[in-house]
Amino acid sequence: MYEKIAWDNFYKTGNIESFLEYKKIGELYSIQNDKVLNMMENVGEDLGEFNQDERNSNKRGSV
Image 1 (cartoon, rainbow, N blue to C red):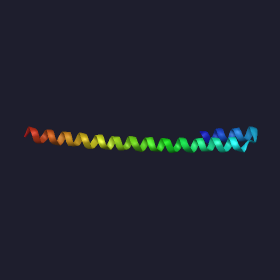
Image 2 (tube, rainbow, N blue to C red):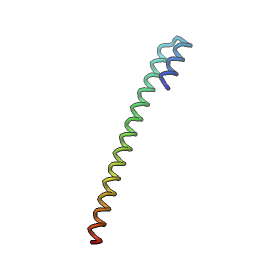
Image 3 (cartoon, rainbow, N blue to C red):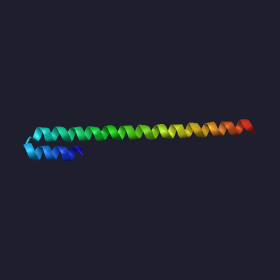
Image 4 (cartoon, one colour):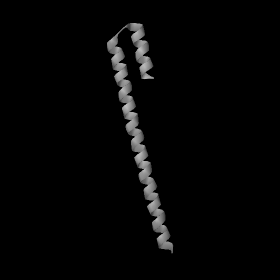
């Protein structure tokens, strides 16, 4: 998305600085999204392990 905006802006204006700025914004946005997705996956895994531990302890207590 940002790459298309960068290219369109460069095509219309010929301003290479704007093109490079938009590309950098796109790269930073992509990096941030990757980090957020990784954090969400880690939280999901941690919750899955926590829930599994809870189920196992409940089974031991009811026997």
